[in-house]
Length: 103
Image 1 (cartoon, helix red, strand yellow):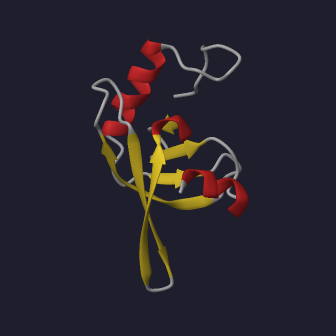
Image 2 (cartoon, rainbow, N blue to C red):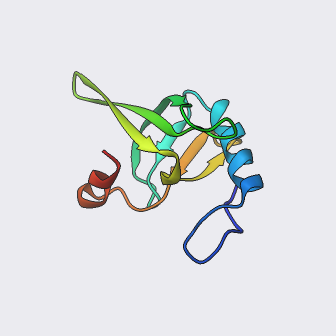
Image 3 (cartoon, rainbow, N blue to C red):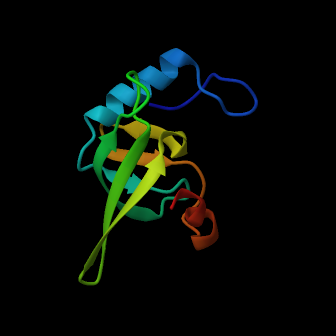
């Protein structure tokens, strides 16, 4: 689902936000990619704390050599969910400096 709508600051409409939340709820195990296509890991699960129509955070698991790592990202970091490709795409690039804002 491509994100559109919203204002110039990148805010999503309530309807678009709810649809993206619905897609994420069913996306466990999907590949997670940065906006530039860099593979960051797999969607482990989503966390609901304050909202009922969309998750507050997503948890991405990655594997580096033998170590497993989990990263918590805010819902706002998600740009789209591609069901056919079983992929979640994040906003931004996979560069270390930009990724650090999600950690």
